[in-house]
Length: 422
Image (cartoon, rainbow, N blue to C red; front, top):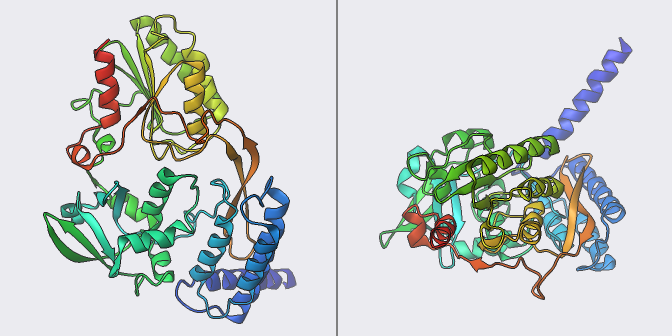
């Protein structure tokens, strides 16, 4: 009986603490302040212990000072204001794999996907209810200009190594309602006023955020060219899995969509199957599409190169292409370089979101009370080929809104035209 009472008491304390940390808009209680102070100290000890070298961009003294200042200024903050301040400090360590991702925090998200172009931020995906917003330019959130909002989020967004990945992450995180409220951009995390511009006119619309799972279900309307793939439009359809598949195109071309990293055994089977198709159909060209690949195990990508390299019918001088974009990150960026080195591939597209020489090989730990996930780097890779420390693009293609809104896949179309000329 006493054991059951102890269990109930422990569970009550646990859920009480979780409830305190889940309050999105109220100032911290004394108990929550104490728990955050403990979490911040746990964070400090573990990032110093686990990260291969956390003090290349910020010195240790400044780092400790800023953490101590945060610990002494918690009482007037809400949960997400504390998280934002911790993210700002963590961000100053200065490598993209050392981050605080919030995807598991249960934050509600507004139902529009954004894409940054050079001179505008456009709605590229939304719910059926707001289909009329597709293609509209986002001008303000809560009365604040988009550029002001973007500047605030630049200081916290995870997994950023250059402008490309910054565009990608900011466009995602600036749709999180609790963060917008914590920054003071919106007053109510349940609804917010968004101002758009379309056909030369501005209009303001109230939007309500959704949980991540519900949002995924309602986001059905898109102008993103790669969301429009179908057998009738481009001849591409999945014959392997949703995230790793291949399809034979005209002009003796094998297109490989490499969006996620599978297990090594799966890639081994996939590579063997791709080789069989190449040999059977005597294909001459290969396109490996890494544009939507955020990374994984780079050695799995090398396994794909191993199998493709066995194909004798391929034009190994000019017939292999790798498509990259702002989402191409971490191992996917490394594999793009690997394919250039091992398969003599031409790299085509936007500048990837990662840099070749820098900290990599991510691991993580969690803070005991807030359950906040902290990621950090365990290794440093030296893969830079150019002094600019960026992936060497053979053909750079910047996203163009006029082409994009017409459903044109600029990078893929460029490669197919280049193949057709040969």
